[in-house]
Image 1 (cartoon, rainbow, N blue to C red):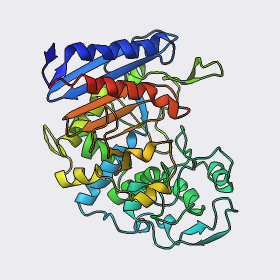
Image 2: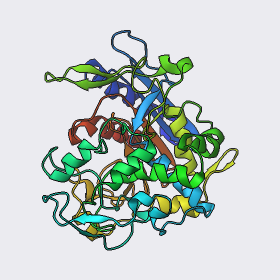
Image 3: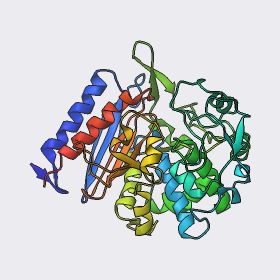
Length: 398
């Protein structure tokens, strides 16, 4: 049985069964899954927002999307680039003087004061592609002195937003050496936080204000922001972690939790399935939306193009096998080789640290979004997202 959009209704029904199994086994409290293709939109709301209250998961439930914020931040930077307010290969120190005159560790395992001069300035492009020389080190915390120095300053990549306001955050970043020379390697995360500060400074207004005026308002993303207002707090799902017995435990509640008030540093959004669909469809339609245009087609194509060289990937450890079929564009991963059902070359997407995931696939004209709230601990936690994407792609019926 087929439905509009070239999706099989029979095969779409498998999504609820598989995700429902995760809920029944106590692996997640609930999920919202969305598949959109050629005008058809299929949504499943499964399980509950909160285990204690039993409030059912809803299509408009609000989720912490963590690193799914990164593509939105990158798109915001490209709005400024299109307006010639920033240039990709300009030194970022033009707006972020804290990044001027960088020093670089002589060796990653050496003291933080054993440094050499940076070979060149950090550029805006370096921030967008995570090649600035600072970010997550794929080793246990405390393995290297630089990890301890980042943690002491509150700027180590992690589940919590930096505790400092943007100017103080940049002062702390500026007090650290780079781990690697600019442009040498890809290091996850920190470039997005620094880019968020650059956007606000270049735009001359708070980041959230800029996003609401330039993106969220035009796209109708009414539930997307850096905190949840009181009128909507009952739609925010509880976020869970897991204890030593693998049982779900509350990591962040809705009322009184981390997103019940504006943060000191705006680096991680909340959103809904339909809000994120609006963003994804804007990318799918080359920057257009029903009311006009957010970005130009060439800009979106640039965002969704692999920016890394083979040498940079080889020097940039991440999750095992990550670079086998992926590259990195601006703010998100790009599929470069088909090695699975849900791996169309040219697809662009990313996941968040609480289990959320999305993909934009131009070849299949599809957007898929999965929203759950369970703190990720390892690469194994991607299984539910991998299952969802397989289910989304196996439902294609043309």
